[in-house]
Every structure is written in structure tokens, then in C-alpha cells.
Length: 145
Image (cartoon, rainbow, N blue to C red; front, side):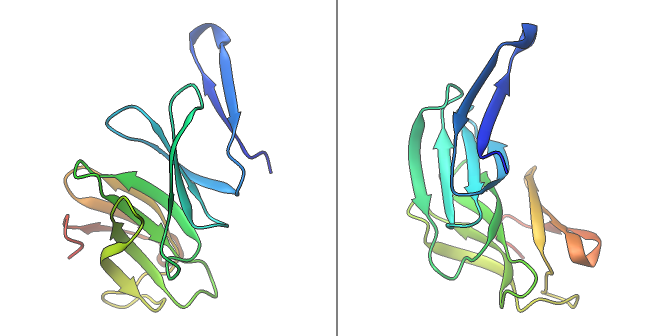
């Protein structure tokens, strides 16, 4: 796996920088910085568009195998996590120290309040979750209800 972010501009100018730690999800925050979710080590890394590491947020230990992160306007983050075999499959809101504030989900499944590999996120006022192994998209409120 290539653990590098590539930024391609017009006229094929390419900037690249290493991320390490098995990067997975990629998003851009309101400051136009790049957020990279590192699944293997449970971290969120924020880079400038030139590849300078601004900050690294270590998620608390029960947020295992994080897939994707989106930053909210409140300097909080929505993180999806859980892969097949993990005891928890959730969408979490964490603060800038990586501590859990709210969560939706729990043990994996397809019932009400359950997720099974929530892999992608989008925020448009609501939080949209691609719950891949349940073949569905959930729309959650900003408080994860």
C-alpha cells in the first residue's frame, strides 16, 4: 500500500507527502486542510495542502479501526469505526483531544441503533453514514440520534 497523499493541481503539478500509519479516510476541513484517518494506529492527522503536519489526534482506545473522519465547525470530529470481528461499530463525536463525547451504534448488527462496518461519512447539517455491510445509508442528527 502506498502511504502517501497526492495533491494534483491544474497542469499536472503534483505534491505528495508521506502519512504512514495506514491512512484510510480522507476529508478536507473548513480551513482547507487535509484530514487523514489512520486506521491501524487510531489517529487523525491534519496536514496543510503542502503536506506540513499541523496536528495529530490520538483517538481513545475503544475507537478501534477508525475509517473516516469529518471535522465539524465546533472543532469536534465525527469518526466512523469498526471492522468485521470488532466488538464495537459506531459513529462517534470526539473532541480535539480524541476523547469520546457522543456515539451511535455499539455491537455490530442490522437492528435499530446498530451498524455493521460504518465506513464513510458526509456532513450537510445531518451526519450521513455509509453502513457498508448493511447496504444502507443512515442519516443522523448532529447529536447522533
